[in-house]
Each structure stands twice: as structure tokens, then as C-alpha cells.
Image (cartoon, rainbow, N blue to C red; front, side, top):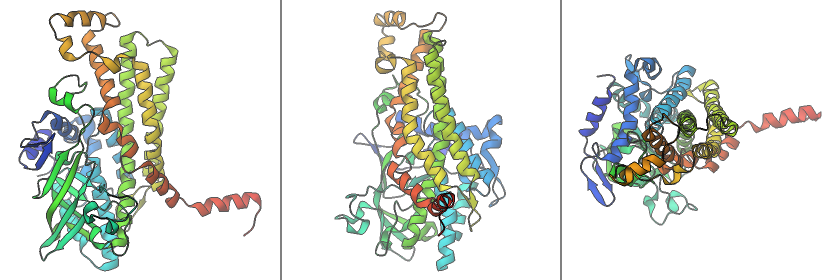
Length: 478
């Protein structure tokens, strides 16, 4: 079947029948819901750009597994070039949609499973890797989008999974059957779960003896019986549903909580079940891949922010203001530093025993810490340059009012020759990129908390080599 077009992707979602709730109501049509459709369109861009001539060579490659052309979002990296392409594709898409395209987490899961299932099999003689490769073939042949179900709700965070008053605070196996397993729990912050065909669940933390029920990895369709998507609120969701004052009506981001209410998973879709010592490998591999993914897409989003700031400088008549130019320079260097750090993580990657390439974890986590701090500063600079109307621009409906509208358009005019409508649209875009909570908060917490990034850096850094270098320079012999 091969590569899907944008239209084929959207129609494939229309055929699925997930259980979805939003604002206290059950939805029966996710594809045509204005709020969810904007998120679906962001993922659709990963299919659309695969057919754009100037992007095709970047996004489409050949799979050594099925020996056919595939979208890179279905291909675990098998070379340094693949690792580098991950970053470049994400930057291109971040620049294209100006928000989260929602497909990188699925690739991060596929890449992780291609490494860790092999390692589990090597130790225990299990058949997880063979199962995974069959699943991956299906993903590639049908160009499926996948979603990462990783973040458990965690309950009392001072307690481990088995110590919780309610054992379902971490996703767990509640029944083992001859034909598969039954799982129960919930995963939070599931960006784009309804834009995906498959939900891939991984553990959220390191586990130990006694946590076997929680050491589980598997894949289920997003409309599997018992799987419930509850769409979370974000700062601009009512505007999206009303169809006004949005700023970018085409692309957006939504984040459901996904409840696994006794979901059955056949054995052929189970990729880990009880091997507690490999949970930490799942977490480290996934989180590091995902933090690398962030650096690509967020540098692409800063590209959009820079473009919006520069355009409003033109519209406002401040394009020659030196202090504005300096602020744009500060935005540019933040984007390029973030991008460069992720490229470095790729170039320093190494081949794993499974044949999949894995990035440099320290550089990937350094990139994510940089993102958490500097995206907020880039947003501040964009708003600073753009002006106060980002905060309190009158509604589209006021602008369309037969009496008030002409007066507003008279007084919202900027530079002569620039239609007032264009200036208004650019203000709205800046507001959306600054205030879209579902996306801006992920700059800090996406891929794990800032503390998780720091802990990983310390754990993965070769501390002894640095101490050895200092002792040598100081003339100390051990």
C-alpha cells in the first residue's frame, strides 16, 4: 500500500471509531470537530510534505525492512544520516505548522522498541523483537501514525507503583490470558492520540523486583475497546470551536488523557511483559529520542516566531529600530543553538546491537534543558517586538460589525500600503504562538520534567574522564 496522501490519511481516521469525550460530551465525529481537526491537520502535514517535491527527498526514504519507500516517521534510524534527518524533518515541519505536528512520539517509540526488544530477547530468549518487527512492517506498509503512551498519572509521587493506595495509578497488567493480556490505568498528556492510528504504551519510569505487572510495552489501535480519550482544555480551545480570534485556524495541538479501561492486547502486540530491569532502558531510550525530536521542531517553531516578529516590524513601521533588530538576533541564535545541539546529538550517535542507531543522550538532554529556558525567552522577545495588541486585540466579530468594524479598522491601521486585515492576522498568530498552552508548556515538561533532563545528563556523563583530566593537569598521580 505504501505512502499515504494527506487525503488518504484523513479518510483513514474517519473510518476509526474511538471513544472520545470533550467538555462533558461524547464525540461521535472527531475528524470534523474544529478543535480536533486542527490537530489532525498538523499531523496531516507529515503526509502532505512527503508529496511536496522540495521536501520529498527529506521525508521519504527506503526501508531496509520492507524494501519500499516509506515516510521517515515509520523508520527507526539505521545510520547517522537517519539520525540527522530526524532533526531536519522536525525543523521543516515545525516551520510549516508553527506548532506540534504530533507524529514524532510514535517514531521515538518505534526507535526505542527496535533497540530494547532485541536486548530483552538476547538475555531471556523471548520473541519480542520478532513481534515488534512484524508490527513495524505493518506500520510501514500502511504508513500509520503512532502515538506514545508513556506518562502515567503517578498518583502519590513519593510512592512507587506497587505502593500506591490505588494500584492503577501506573498502567499495569491485570490479567494474563492464553491469547493476550488485559491492561488498566491511564496515560496523561497524550498529544495527538486521536490523530494517530496506533497507541504504543511504554513504562514511564525505572522499575524493580515486585513491579512486574507494570513492566509492560504494547501497541493497540486508538479505537480499541475500553480505550477512552478525554480531551484536555487549553488556552485557545473555545476560540477554535467558535471559529474566531484564533490566529491560525489550520494547525493546532490538543492533549487528551487516555484511559485504559481493561483493554485487551493480543500477545503479538506485546513487546515487554514483566522484564522489570529493562523498563529503565525503555525510559532512557524513548526520552532521549524524544528530547532530540523536540530540538528540531522547536527550532522550526522559533523560525515562525522570528518571521512573525519581522513581519510586524514591517507592518508597525519599526523595521529600522536597532533594538528590535537586536531582539530578532537573540531569537535567531536561540533557534540555531537548539538546532545545533540536536544535530550534534545525532552525529555523535552510535549503532546498537540490534542495528538501530541511538543518539548521544547527554547532548539530547542538554538540548531539552536549553529549550525549556530559551523558548520562553524567544516568546518574550517576539511579544516585545510585536507590540501591545498581542494582548487585547478586539474580536473578529467586532471587526465585522457594520458600525464598529469600520472604526476599528481605521484605528488598527499600521504602515500605509499594508492592509489592516494582514496586521490583525499577524497579531493573532503571535498571540497563538505565545499563548497556546498545550504547546508552550510542552517546552518545559515535554519529554519529561526539567529535573529528569538534569538527572539523565549526570547519569550518562563520563564523570571519571573529567576528573582524570583535572588530576593530570594538576600533576596528581593516582
